[in-house]
Length: 77
Image (cartoon, rainbow, N blue to C red; front, side, top):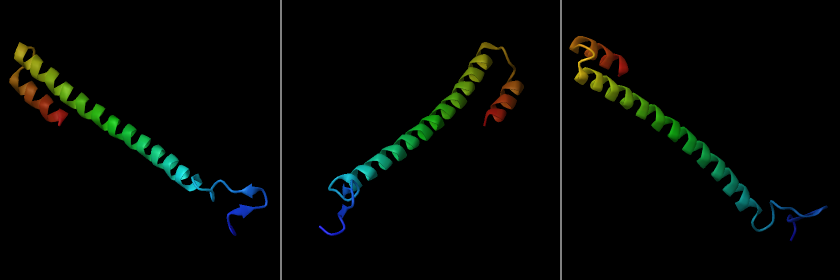
């Protein structure tokens, strides 16, 4: 077992599951970062559509004129 044994005993990275566990750990960290970034993107997309829905509702109620509606709609995009 030359190379697997050091002065302190068996190295964790050289043992059966050590390398796999390190890869699994980093894969989990990368997946968590990906999920956080994706969730932040979804929240931003929902807030834009929500603002447009509010604008459409205000126009439907007659609170704003067509010209103002079109200007604000262009600003949201």
